[in-house]
Length: 114
Length: 112
Image 1 (tube, rainbow over the protein chains, first blue to last red):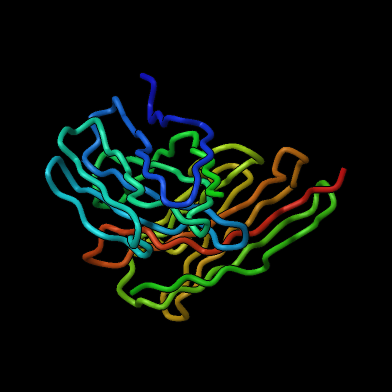
Image 2: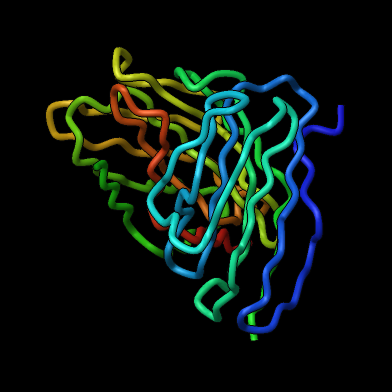
């Protein structure tokens, strides 16, 4: 199993550009989520999904869209990139949304918006 | 929503000493409390977790304690080693919620 994979590893965007961060898992996990990690801020939840076709907002959803058309994939779209979106983005998945629900994290995408 | 406070933000200990990191949470109905370790440049990884119906859990040199009345939980690392140096995050899951709320992290440095 590859676990949770993310692409790209690094990305530089200009203000106003759009892009999609890819996330995939091969563990048949029901629950997937996106976090951003900023220095001194911990991990903040952007969006999450409890199954294919079901998504919801987390703590910091503005400027981001998600969809979940399959169990395996959960892409994160930046609609119009802003410097405030410079961050490290982690995708995570877990077998269930009910505890204990160990979340397995992907390797992360480091995004810089100029 | 849930709010998680984590202290201290940085912690330095001598190799072999113990380290304690504390977290408080706001939602008295929260029922799941994991701890993640993140090494520099790596992804967070679960090291131990505890559910609200348990007061303490141990795994070798790592233990977590939960005080539901005071709404706080702590990570204890004994006999620290240089490879324990990392950032540690606590988290809490509110009852009826799918979301984990994370603390801001503690950077632990173990000095050889």
